[in-house]
Amino acid sequence: MKMHFCIPVSQQRPDALGGRYTLYSVYLDGLLFCRVRYSQLHRWNEQLRRVFGNCLPPFPPKYYLAMTTSMANERRDQLEHYLQNVTVDPNMLRSDVFVEFLKRVQLDTFSITAKKAALDILLPDGRSMEVEILTSDTAERVLEVVSHKIGLCRELLGYFGLFLIRFCKEGKLSVMKKLADFELPYVSLRSSELENCKVGLRKWYLDPSLDSMLMDCRAAVNLIYMQAIQDIQGGWAEPTRAQRQKLEALQEEGNQTKFLELSREVRHYGCVQLDPCTCDYPEPGCGAVLSVGNNEISCCVTLPGNQTQHVVFPMSRVKCWQVTFLGTLLDMDGPQRTLNQNLELRFQYSEESHWQWFVLYTKQAFLLSSCLKKMISEKMAKRAAENPEMQIEVLDQGKRKKYHIQQSQQKDYSSFLPRTSKIKTAEGDCVSGTPEEEGL
View 1: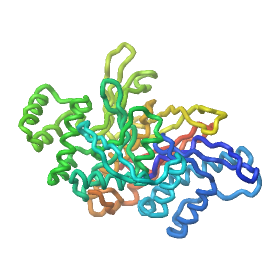
View 2: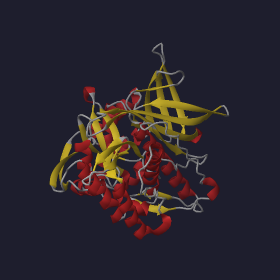
View 3: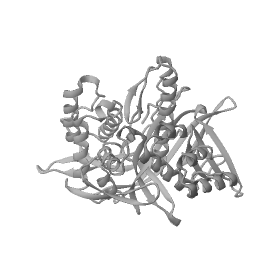
């Protein structure tokens, strides 16, 4: 599946020979990832092509004369699509050529040298654990260090991930994004413009039944048990009064297994809850709180008269979705042009045999998109396990496995909204009737 790369900002810089070059600001999941020149990306593409041959997506050509504004915008669009498409191949994502280049540009962009450092990792119960790492360590490597320190079985790493987590008012936590395997957690944390942020460890699956895959590892059980308690206390999971009483009794007994078994019956257990946002359902400007998981999007909408309405969208009714990256430039004339983000996610769903759009305005649009992708990949993996004739590639128990899928079920319903200005850009994440995401 493609990564959420986009290039909403670029600027002209003078070079040493008196000429000028374009510096592209590359964003990943809505946050600044790096700044690079065309020449750097061109050399990287040549290195990748020597390893992977012609399976790479097309790279925008060189221009030997001055570019017009339309040509410059076209190149930026092409570079954006290249970054999105080059991440589709999981073998490429794990290659040294791919990872080493992205490590270097992250460090260079934020003027951070590779050295030993201490990094605090937020555990699911709210405690912090310090680990010794290198500033150049990827999220994949840091996760290995953390798992070794807490005794988590290596084969279960694929069920967990590192996230950027922000502390909000009244001690509530807000998950901002999942760190990609090739991201540098130390750099992402230091470069983030978000206040009160930490790198946190959480489970990364949205099908509660997958808890059963972790029950033979004591450290894994401890982690999902701590997260279950935190989610209930934080209001992410909503037990009934009777369920809460039973859970409290099991917690006092220290019976983690029974606690987790009962938790799986709790409403919104295992879901990711987004911060309050706005939507256009049933009319524009309504407040909304979303919980995503267990193969559905659950939305609590606040109506104009302060009444609330609960709406549930099973993923089987969702046809496609798209994220629109709208922004306004800050520091227009300064050396660092930054972006004030406004994000929109809309998904198309069926209701009474008609297709309709549900529009959300949230700074966590990319996180929501990642969760939708995750639910699709989990559902496809489950179907593949039930049908050995299917073949898809999914992440299972920390390892990538291939399953068979009929071609007719793997349609590409991707769509990209046209760029209408230098700042407005868009990306599409789409699925067919058998959910399949092939967009950004």
